[in-house]
Amino acid sequence: MKPVPLFWDAETESKRLQFRQFAQEHIAPHAQEADRQEHMPHDIIAQVASQGLLGSLVTSEYGGRNDDYLQFGLLNEELGAACSSVRTLLTVHSMTVQAVMQWGTAEQKKKYLPGLAQGRTLGAFALTEPQAGSDARGIATSAVQTEGGWILNGVKRWISFGQCADLLLVMAAVETKQSTPANRQAIALLFPTNTPGFSRQPIKGLLGTRASMLAELHFNDCFVPAENVLSRPGFGLAVCSSALEIGRLSVAWGGVGIAQACLEASAAYAAKRRQFDRALAEHQLIQAKITDMMVAVQTARLLCVQASRARQAGHPHSVLDVLMAKYHAAKMAQQAAQQAVQIHGANGCSDEYPVSRLYRDAKTLEIIEGTSEVLQGLIAKQVRMVLNN
Ligand SMILES: Cc1cc2nc3c(=O)[nH]c(=O)nc-3n(C[C@H](O)[C@H](O)[C@H](O)COP(=O)(O)OP(=O)(O)OC[C@H]3O[C@@H](n4cnc5c(N)ncnc54)[C@H](O)[C@@H]3O)c2cc1C
Image (cartoon, rainbow, N blue to C red; front, top):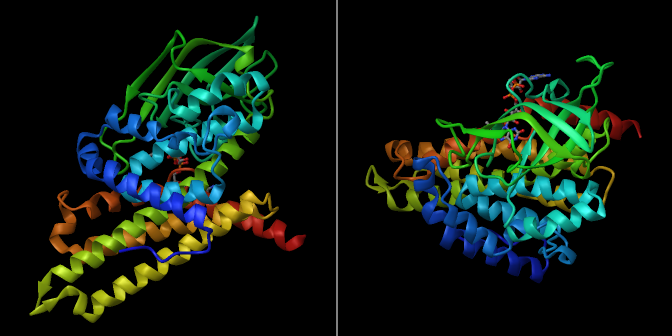
Protein backbone atom coordinates (compact mmCIF):
# COMPACT_ATOMS: atom_id res chain seq x y z
CA MET A 1 0.00 0.00 0.00
CA LYS A 2 1.33 3.41 -0.97
CA PRO A 3 1.25 6.08 1.75
CA VAL A 4 -0.93 8.99 0.68
CA PRO A 5 1.29 11.79 -0.70
CA LEU A 6 1.57 14.76 1.60
CA PHE A 7 2.66 18.30 1.11
CA TRP A 8 6.11 18.07 -0.35
CA ASP A 9 7.61 18.83 -3.69
CA ALA A 10 8.53 16.42 -6.48
CA GLU A 11 12.23 16.35 -5.53
CA THR A 12 11.39 15.33 -1.96
CA GLU A 13 8.90 12.73 -3.16
CA SER A 14 11.51 11.27 -5.47
CA LYS A 15 13.97 11.04 -2.54
CA ARG A 16 11.28 9.41 -0.39
CA LEU A 17 10.68 6.78 -3.05
CA GLN A 18 14.41 6.07 -3.26
CA PHE A 19 14.63 5.76 0.53
CA ARG A 20 11.65 3.42 0.53
CA GLN A 21 12.98 1.23 -2.24
CA PHE A 22 16.38 0.95 -0.59
CA ALA A 23 14.91 0.24 2.85
CA GLN A 24 12.43 -2.36 1.61
CA GLU A 25 14.91 -4.13 -0.67
CA HIS A 26 18.08 -4.03 1.38
CA ILE A 27 17.14 -3.50 5.03
CA ALA A 28 13.69 -4.99 5.74
CA PRO A 29 14.57 -8.56 4.63
CA HIS A 30 17.32 -8.72 7.29
CA ALA A 31 15.54 -6.97 10.17
CA GLN A 32 14.01 -10.05 11.77
CA GLU A 33 17.29 -12.00 11.77
CA ALA A 34 19.28 -9.03 13.10
CA ASP A 35 16.71 -8.79 15.92
CA ARG A 36 17.03 -12.54 16.68
CA GLN A 37 20.83 -12.37 16.67
CA GLU A 38 20.88 -9.05 18.61
CA HIS A 39 23.52 -7.96 16.16
CA MET A 40 23.71 -5.56 13.22
CA PRO A 41 25.72 -7.21 10.43
CA HIS A 42 28.57 -5.07 9.19
CA ASP A 43 27.30 -5.55 5.64
CA ILE A 44 24.03 -3.74 6.44
CA ILE A 45 25.87 -0.76 7.90
CA ALA A 46 28.16 -0.76 4.85
CA GLN A 47 25.15 -0.69 2.51
CA VAL A 48 23.56 2.25 4.34
CA ALA A 49 26.91 4.03 4.27
CA SER A 50 27.52 3.27 0.59
CA GLN A 51 24.26 5.05 -0.29
CA GLY A 52 25.58 8.12 1.55
CA LEU A 53 22.59 7.97 3.90
CA LEU A 54 24.67 8.49 7.04
CA GLY A 55 25.66 11.86 5.57
CA SER A 56 22.03 12.99 5.30
CA LEU A 57 22.60 16.11 7.42
CA VAL A 58 26.18 16.81 6.37
CA THR A 59 26.52 19.73 3.95
CA SER A 60 27.86 19.04 0.45
CA GLU A 61 31.04 20.97 1.25
CA TYR A 62 32.07 18.00 3.43
CA GLY A 63 30.74 15.32 1.08
CA GLY A 64 27.27 14.95 2.62
CA ARG A 65 23.79 14.74 1.06
CA ASN A 66 22.71 18.08 2.53
CA ASP A 67 19.13 16.83 2.96
CA ASP A 68 16.72 19.26 4.54
CA TYR A 69 14.97 18.24 7.77
CA LEU A 70 11.88 17.03 5.93
CA GLN A 71 13.97 14.77 3.68
CA PHE A 72 15.94 13.63 6.74
CA GLY A 73 12.61 12.86 8.43
CA LEU A 74 11.34 10.83 5.49
CA LEU A 75 14.59 8.86 5.49
CA ASN A 76 14.03 8.09 9.18
CA GLU A 77 10.45 7.05 8.47
CA GLU A 78 11.47 4.62 5.74
CA LEU A 79 14.41 3.15 7.65
CA GLY A 80 12.24 3.02 10.79
CA ALA A 81 9.53 1.08 8.93
CA ALA A 82 12.12 -1.42 7.70
CA CYS A 83 14.25 -1.82 10.84
CA SER A 84 14.25 0.33 13.97
CA SER A 85 17.82 -0.66 14.79
CA VAL A 86 19.08 0.74 11.47
CA ARG A 87 17.06 3.90 12.10
CA THR A 88 18.75 4.07 15.53
CA LEU A 89 22.14 4.07 13.81
CA LEU A 90 21.04 7.04 11.72
CA THR A 91 19.72 8.75 14.88
CA VAL A 92 22.85 8.58 17.02
CA HIS A 93 25.19 9.12 14.08
CA SER A 94 23.23 12.22 13.03
CA MET A 95 23.34 13.57 16.60
CA THR A 96 27.13 13.48 16.42
CA VAL A 97 27.05 15.05 12.94
CA GLN A 98 24.75 17.81 14.13
CA ALA A 99 26.98 18.61 17.12
CA VAL A 100 30.09 18.90 14.93
CA MET A 101 28.23 21.00 12.33
CA GLN A 102 26.77 23.38 14.89
CA TRP A 103 29.51 23.58 17.51
CA GLY A 104 32.68 22.35 15.83
CA THR A 105 35.69 24.46 14.89
CA ALA A 106 36.75 24.67 11.23
CA GLU A 107 39.49 22.09 11.98
CA GLN A 108 37.06 19.69 13.68
CA LYS A 109 34.65 19.94 10.75
CA LYS A 110 37.41 19.29 8.25
CA LYS A 111 38.75 16.40 10.28
CA TYR A 112 35.51 14.58 11.13
CA LEU A 113 32.67 15.49 8.76
CA PRO A 114 33.94 13.79 5.55
CA GLY A 115 34.34 10.45 7.38
CA LEU A 116 30.96 10.84 9.12
CA ALA A 117 29.30 11.73 5.80
CA GLN A 118 30.57 8.60 4.08
CA GLY A 119 30.07 6.34 7.09
CA ARG A 120 33.81 5.55 7.30
CA THR A 121 33.50 7.00 10.81
CA LEU A 122 30.46 5.84 12.82
CA GLY A 123 29.24 8.32 15.41
CA ALA A 124 27.36 7.65 18.66
CA PHE A 125 25.99 9.70 21.54
CA ALA A 126 27.19 8.99 25.07
CA LEU A 127 25.23 10.76 27.78
CA THR A 128 23.48 8.18 29.99
CA GLU A 129 25.25 6.62 32.97
CA PRO A 130 24.22 3.94 35.46
CA GLN A 131 23.15 6.65 37.94
CA ALA A 132 22.23 9.45 35.52
CA GLY A 133 19.31 8.87 33.16
CA SER A 134 16.57 11.46 32.73
CA ASP A 135 18.49 13.95 34.85
CA ALA A 136 21.54 14.65 32.69
CA ARG A 137 22.85 17.08 35.30
CA GLY A 138 23.78 14.06 37.40
CA ILE A 139 26.51 12.73 35.11
CA ALA A 140 29.59 11.60 37.02
CA THR A 141 32.01 10.86 34.17
CA SER A 142 34.78 13.30 35.03
CA ALA A 143 36.97 15.46 32.84
CA VAL A 144 40.11 16.79 34.54
CA GLN A 145 42.19 19.34 32.68
CA THR A 146 45.79 18.39 32.06
CA GLU A 147 48.58 19.62 29.82
CA GLY A 148 47.27 19.74 26.24
CA GLY A 149 43.86 18.27 26.98
CA TRP A 150 41.60 16.40 29.38
CA ILE A 151 41.64 13.11 31.28
CA LEU A 152 38.35 11.23 31.19
CA ASN A 153 37.18 8.69 33.78
CA GLY A 154 33.78 7.08 34.15
CA VAL A 155 31.13 4.76 32.77
CA LYS A 156 28.43 5.36 30.16
CA ARG A 157 25.56 2.87 29.80
CA TRP A 158 22.89 2.04 27.22
CA ILE A 159 24.87 3.59 24.37
CA SER A 160 23.36 2.65 21.00
CA PHE A 161 26.01 1.42 18.56
CA GLY A 162 28.51 1.82 21.39
CA GLN A 163 29.82 -1.63 20.40
CA CYS A 164 31.14 -0.39 17.07
CA ALA A 165 31.17 3.44 16.99
CA ASP A 166 34.44 5.11 15.99
CA LEU A 167 33.64 8.54 17.38
CA LEU A 168 31.60 9.36 20.47
CA LEU A 169 29.97 12.61 21.44
CA VAL A 170 30.63 12.36 25.18
CA MET A 171 29.22 14.52 27.96
CA ALA A 172 31.39 14.79 31.06
CA ALA A 173 31.50 16.84 34.24
CA VAL A 174 34.53 19.09 34.72
CA GLU A 175 36.32 18.28 37.94
CA THR A 176 38.53 20.89 39.61
CA LYS A 177 39.82 21.30 43.17
CA GLN A 178 36.91 23.68 43.82
CA SER A 179 34.13 21.71 42.14
CA THR A 180 31.48 19.79 44.05
CA PRO A 181 28.90 17.37 42.57
CA ALA A 182 26.41 20.26 42.74
CA ASN A 183 28.40 22.87 40.82
CA ARG A 184 30.38 20.85 38.28
CA GLN A 185 30.11 22.20 34.74
CA ALA A 186 29.38 19.97 31.76
CA ILE A 187 31.73 19.71 28.80
CA ALA A 188 31.15 18.04 25.42
CA LEU A 189 34.03 16.14 23.83
CA LEU A 190 34.65 14.26 20.61
CA PHE A 191 36.12 10.94 21.64
CA PRO A 192 37.79 8.54 19.15
CA THR A 193 37.19 5.01 20.43
CA ASN A 194 40.75 3.91 19.63
CA THR A 195 41.92 6.02 22.59
CA PRO A 196 44.02 4.00 25.10
CA GLY A 197 42.14 3.24 28.33
CA PHE A 198 38.74 2.90 26.59
CA SER A 199 36.80 -0.37 26.63
CA ARG A 200 33.25 -1.51 25.85
CA GLN A 201 30.96 -4.29 26.98
CA PRO A 202 28.02 -5.33 24.80
CA ILE A 203 24.55 -5.17 26.42
CA LYS A 204 22.33 -8.10 25.44
CA GLY A 205 18.77 -9.16 26.22
CA LEU A 206 17.03 -5.93 25.26
CA LEU A 207 13.27 -5.64 24.79
CA GLY A 208 13.43 -3.72 21.51
CA THR A 209 15.81 -2.33 18.89
CA ARG A 210 17.77 -5.43 19.77
CA ALA A 211 20.22 -5.06 16.89
CA SER A 212 21.30 -1.58 17.88
CA MET A 213 24.57 -2.80 19.37
CA LEU A 214 24.14 -1.24 22.80
CA ALA A 215 27.17 -1.11 25.04
CA GLU A 216 28.44 -0.03 28.39
CA LEU A 217 31.49 2.15 27.86
CA HIS A 218 34.40 2.44 30.27
CA PHE A 219 36.80 5.38 30.29
CA ASN A 220 39.88 4.71 32.33
CA ASP A 221 42.31 7.66 32.39
CA CYS A 222 41.61 8.38 28.72
CA PHE A 223 43.45 11.37 27.31
CA VAL A 224 41.38 13.67 25.07
CA PRO A 225 43.40 16.36 23.28
CA ALA A 226 42.22 19.96 23.67
CA GLU A 227 41.38 20.11 19.97
CA ASN A 228 38.61 17.53 20.56
CA VAL A 229 36.67 19.77 22.92
CA LEU A 230 33.35 20.79 21.33
CA SER A 231 32.14 23.18 23.98
CA ARG A 232 33.93 25.06 26.67
CA PRO A 233 33.04 24.06 30.25
CA GLY A 234 29.52 25.15 31.11
CA PHE A 235 28.20 24.69 27.57
CA GLY A 236 28.15 20.89 27.47
CA LEU A 237 24.44 20.66 28.18
CA ALA A 238 23.70 23.15 25.38
CA VAL A 239 25.55 20.85 22.94
CA CYS A 240 23.67 17.93 24.42
CA SER A 241 20.26 19.64 24.03
CA SER A 242 20.88 20.54 20.40
CA ALA A 243 21.97 16.96 19.62
CA LEU A 244 18.91 15.63 21.46
CA GLU A 245 16.65 17.79 19.32
CA ILE A 246 17.91 15.98 16.20
CA GLY A 247 17.57 12.69 18.05
CA ARG A 248 13.95 13.48 18.91
CA LEU A 249 13.09 14.49 15.37
CA SER A 250 14.65 11.29 14.08
CA VAL A 251 12.83 9.11 16.63
CA ALA A 252 9.50 10.87 15.96
CA TRP A 253 9.74 10.05 12.26
CA GLY A 254 10.95 6.55 13.13
CA GLY A 255 7.74 6.12 15.14
CA VAL A 256 5.69 7.08 12.10
CA GLY A 257 7.65 4.46 10.15
CA ILE A 258 6.87 1.75 12.71
CA ALA A 259 3.17 2.64 12.70
CA GLN A 260 3.03 2.73 8.90
CA ALA A 261 4.64 -0.73 8.81
CA CYS A 262 2.06 -1.95 11.36
CA LEU A 263 -0.78 -0.52 9.28
CA GLU A 264 0.46 -2.11 6.06
CA ALA A 265 1.09 -5.49 7.72
CA SER A 266 -2.33 -5.41 9.42
CA ALA A 267 -4.26 -4.43 6.28
CA ALA A 268 -2.56 -7.22 4.30
CA TYR A 269 -3.11 -9.80 7.03
CA ALA A 270 -6.75 -8.80 7.58
CA ALA A 271 -7.43 -9.14 3.86
CA LYS A 272 -6.04 -12.70 3.77
CA ARG A 273 -6.98 -14.25 7.10
CA ARG A 274 -10.53 -15.62 7.25
CA GLN A 275 -12.58 -16.29 10.37
CA PHE A 276 -16.34 -16.84 10.67
CA ASP A 277 -16.57 -17.36 6.87
CA ARG A 278 -15.16 -14.00 5.92
CA ALA A 279 -11.91 -12.06 5.82
CA LEU A 280 -10.92 -10.32 9.07
CA ALA A 281 -11.06 -7.09 7.06
CA GLU A 282 -14.82 -7.55 6.74
CA HIS A 283 -15.38 -7.61 10.52
CA GLN A 284 -16.35 -4.17 11.72
CA LEU A 285 -14.23 -4.26 14.89
CA ILE A 286 -11.14 -4.98 12.76
CA GLN A 287 -12.14 -2.18 10.38
CA ALA A 288 -12.32 0.17 13.36
CA LYS A 289 -8.77 -0.75 14.39
CA ILE A 290 -7.43 -0.23 10.85
CA THR A 291 -9.26 3.11 10.62
CA ASP A 292 -7.84 4.30 13.94
CA MET A 293 -4.33 3.25 12.91
CA MET A 294 -4.58 5.06 9.59
CA VAL A 295 -5.84 8.28 11.20
CA ALA A 296 -3.24 8.05 13.97
CA VAL A 297 -0.28 7.50 11.66
CA GLN A 298 -1.31 10.33 9.38
CA THR A 299 -1.85 12.70 12.32
CA ALA A 300 1.60 11.91 13.72
CA ARG A 301 3.16 12.30 10.27
CA LEU A 302 1.64 15.78 10.00
CA LEU A 303 3.14 16.73 13.37
CA CYS A 304 6.50 15.46 12.12
CA VAL A 305 6.21 17.44 8.88
CA GLN A 306 5.42 20.52 10.95
CA ALA A 307 8.42 19.90 13.25
CA SER A 308 10.80 19.39 10.32
CA ARG A 309 9.55 22.48 8.54
CA ALA A 310 9.71 24.62 11.68
CA ARG A 311 13.28 23.51 12.34
CA GLN A 312 14.26 24.11 8.72
CA ALA A 313 12.86 27.63 8.91
CA GLY A 314 14.54 28.27 12.28
CA HIS A 315 11.11 29.07 13.69
CA PRO A 316 11.15 30.05 17.38
CA HIS A 317 8.52 27.36 18.15
CA SER A 318 10.52 24.57 16.53
CA VAL A 319 11.70 23.19 19.88
CA LEU A 320 8.07 22.76 20.95
CA ASP A 321 7.13 21.27 17.57
CA VAL A 322 9.90 18.67 17.79
CA LEU A 323 9.00 17.78 21.38
CA MET A 324 5.33 17.35 20.46
CA ALA A 325 6.15 15.25 17.41
CA LYS A 326 8.39 12.91 19.41
CA TYR A 327 6.00 12.61 22.34
CA HIS A 328 2.98 11.94 20.15
CA ALA A 329 4.65 9.69 17.55
CA ALA A 330 6.22 7.45 20.21
CA LYS A 331 2.88 6.95 21.96
CA MET A 332 1.04 6.50 18.67
CA ALA A 333 3.56 3.92 17.40
CA GLN A 334 3.20 1.94 20.60
CA GLN A 335 -0.61 1.94 20.31
CA ALA A 336 -0.55 1.08 16.60
CA ALA A 337 1.86 -1.80 17.22
CA GLN A 338 -0.36 -3.10 20.03
CA GLN A 339 -3.36 -3.13 17.65
CA ALA A 340 -1.29 -4.75 14.91
CA VAL A 341 -0.37 -7.64 17.22
CA GLN A 342 -4.05 -7.95 18.18
CA ILE A 343 -5.14 -8.15 14.53
CA HIS A 344 -2.53 -10.86 13.88
CA GLY A 345 -3.75 -12.96 16.86
CA ALA A 346 -1.33 -15.76 17.79
CA ASN A 347 0.74 -15.06 14.69
CA GLY A 348 1.35 -11.57 16.10
CA CYS A 349 3.03 -13.18 19.10
CA SER A 350 5.43 -15.11 16.90
CA ASP A 351 8.71 -13.78 15.56
CA GLU A 352 7.77 -15.18 12.16
CA TYR A 353 5.69 -12.04 11.71
CA PRO A 354 7.36 -8.60 11.95
CA VAL A 355 4.62 -7.06 14.12
CA SER A 356 6.01 -8.72 17.26
CA ARG A 357 9.34 -6.93 16.63
CA LEU A 358 7.58 -3.68 15.76
CA TYR A 359 5.66 -3.91 19.04
CA ARG A 360 8.85 -4.31 21.08
CA ASP A 361 10.70 -1.64 19.10
CA ALA A 362 7.82 0.83 19.49
CA LYS A 363 7.97 0.60 23.29
CA THR A 364 11.59 1.77 23.36
CA LEU A 365 10.61 4.99 21.57
CA GLU A 366 8.82 6.12 24.73
CA ILE A 367 12.08 5.82 26.67
CA ILE A 368 14.88 7.03 24.38
CA GLU A 369 15.80 10.68 23.66
CA GLY A 370 13.82 11.74 26.72
CA THR A 371 11.09 9.58 28.25
CA SER A 372 7.46 10.49 27.62
CA GLU A 373 7.19 11.83 31.18
CA VAL A 374 10.25 14.04 30.77
CA LEU A 375 8.86 15.29 27.46
CA GLN A 376 5.50 16.08 29.08
CA GLY A 377 7.37 18.31 31.52
CA LEU A 378 9.39 19.98 28.75
CA ILE A 379 6.31 20.53 26.56
CA ALA A 380 4.41 22.11 29.45
CA LYS A 381 7.38 24.44 30.07
CA GLN A 382 7.49 25.41 26.38
CA VAL A 383 3.74 26.00 26.35
CA ARG A 384 4.11 28.43 29.25
CA MET A 385 6.89 30.27 27.38
CA VAL A 386 4.97 30.37 24.10
CA LEU A 387 1.72 31.53 25.70
CA ASN A 388 3.43 34.20 27.77
CA ASN A 389 5.13 35.74 24.72
C1 LIG B 1 17.17 0.97 23.55
C2 LIG B 1 17.84 2.12 24.25
C3 LIG B 1 18.81 2.86 23.59
C4 LIG B 1 19.46 3.92 24.24
N1 LIG B 1 20.46 4.60 23.61
C5 LIG B 1 21.13 5.59 24.25
C6 LIG B 1 22.23 6.28 23.63
O1 LIG B 1 22.57 6.01 22.46
N2 LIG B 1 22.90 7.23 24.33
C7 LIG B 1 22.55 7.56 25.61
O2 LIG B 1 23.20 8.43 26.19
N3 LIG B 1 21.52 6.92 26.24
C8 LIG B 1 20.80 5.95 25.60
N4 LIG B 1 19.74 5.30 26.21
C9 LIG B 1 19.38 5.66 27.58
C10 LIG B 1 18.11 6.50 27.62
O3 LIG B 1 18.36 7.78 27.11
C11 LIG B 1 17.62 6.54 29.07
O4 LIG B 1 17.16 5.23 29.36
C12 LIG B 1 16.53 7.55 29.32
O5 LIG B 1 17.04 8.86 29.27
C13 LIG B 1 15.85 7.35 30.68
O6 LIG B 1 16.77 7.21 31.70
P1 LIG B 1 16.67 5.97 32.69
O7 LIG B 1 16.53 4.73 31.90
O8 LIG B 1 17.81 6.05 33.64
O9 LIG B 1 15.31 6.16 33.47
P2 LIG B 1 15.07 7.10 34.75
O10 LIG B 1 15.56 8.47 34.49
O11 LIG B 1 15.55 6.39 35.95
O12 LIG B 1 13.47 7.13 34.76
C14 LIG B 1 12.69 6.00 35.16
C15 LIG B 1 11.20 6.41 35.05
O13 LIG B 1 10.96 7.55 35.89
C16 LIG B 1 10.42 8.60 35.10
N5 LIG B 1 10.92 9.91 35.54
C17 LIG B 1 12.21 10.30 35.70
N6 LIG B 1 12.26 11.59 36.07
C18 LIG B 1 10.97 12.03 36.13
C19 LIG B 1 10.34 13.28 36.43
N7 LIG B 1 11.06 14.37 36.73
N8 LIG B 1 8.98 13.35 36.40
C20 LIG B 1 8.25 12.26 36.08
N9 LIG B 1 8.77 11.06 35.78
C21 LIG B 1 10.12 10.94 35.80
C22 LIG B 1 10.89 8.33 33.67
O14 LIG B 1 10.04 8.95 32.72
C23 LIG B 1 10.80 6.83 33.62
O15 LIG B 1 9.48 6.44 33.36
C24 LIG B 1 19.09 4.24 25.58
C25 LIG B 1 18.08 3.50 26.22
C26 LIG B 1 17.47 2.44 25.57
C27 LIG B 1 16.41 1.66 26.29
